[in-house]
Image 1 (spheres, rainbow, N blue to C red):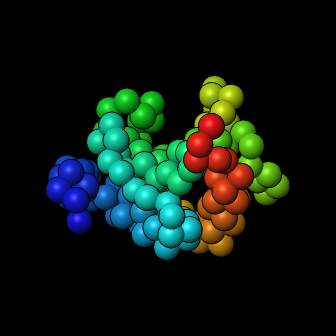
Image 2 (cartoon, rainbow, N blue to C red; image 1 turned 60 degrees about the vertical axis):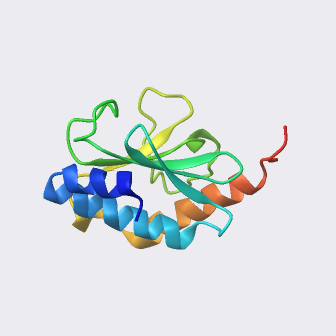
Length: 128
């Protein structure tokens, strides 16, 4: 595990650490192999041809949330999301879901939205 990721997890309150770790594992297992994780702004970002999603715990400044962990999709405005899994908020592009406990993580809708995001990412060319 990358040192900055370990540092992040160690710095989080227990519930945010659990939520962050569960979300990361599901994302890593679901996104295609060409997708990568990097720590940026002290939080896990996932990208393929372009940015796909990020996991932002409230304990890390700059995410704009006061509690829980935000799972945000960079191109959420382009996802079909027929079941309205994601919230829009004030950003026209980034849609998100906030979890305040690990028990709130429903794997089936999460897998569905991650697959939609991966399909969208596959349509982006690596070279503009």
